[in-house]
Image (cartoon, rainbow over all chains, first blue to last red; front, side, top):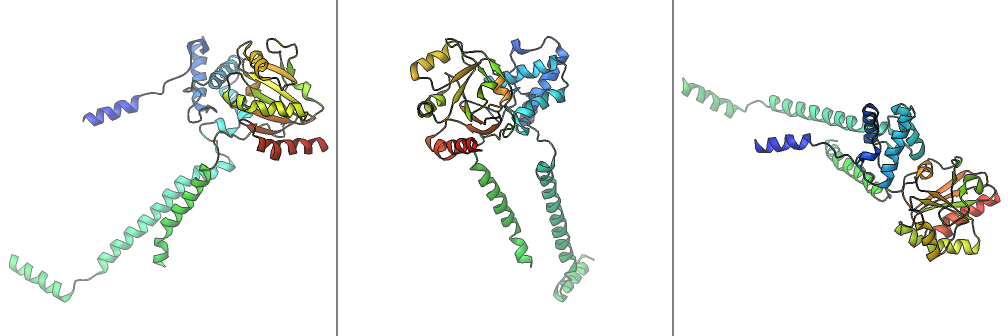
Length: 151
Length: 177
């Protein structure tokens, strides 16, 4: 039970945000959109973090830039495109679905499918093998004896 | 036939393992540049403290040149610096400096101490031009051709080997074309 509680608590922990008070926009709705974008963009310095999590100076510059674009009336997609134009698809933490990433997106499902087919076939064959083996005459006799004993 | 199938998982393991092993040999800090063969983004930066000339993208027109992104805070720039001095002294290529996110005065003090290989230097304290160039860290060096198109980006301090086998031959080839 204690383990369960700890697990649940750990799952509830949210990612710490590196966004500093002086970067935040006064408009809470706009700031919320900005943070949504921050979480989708990779920090190119510490590459396994988003710019929302990273305290690298470049991540800060990018957060300020995102807020500037939104304040100037960009949609979320336009603000993200602005940065992708400069840093490439690489800055997107979630790779876009496009011809050069089809393999990436389809591969796990494909492996699961192939594994599933193999598992089903193997289980069926194992089941069939069991059902197909009849009892030997000795076994039949032993079984008959046991039945009579029980009666 | 069944025996061959038993080897399939091993084969799959080797294939996936080889794929990952190849991936591990690649340096993750080398992100492909979006700018290659595209026009250099236009910029016009003020001079750093203590200098008269700033740096505008138009300054690079007419010759194949280098833009070197550096900062006095950047340790690898220190390592790269003697080679930049040599390149400048030999006149192999004009080098322009982008002083990235440096405090006012720090860049000039650094150059006074170690020497100045740059023809012109732009002050990018806000880091906006660096973002336009897709800079991920310092030092980074761009090769820009006569018509202001970016032709190559080198991430990290330029080594003598990289200069002699990659960068300088590329510059000479671009000059001929």
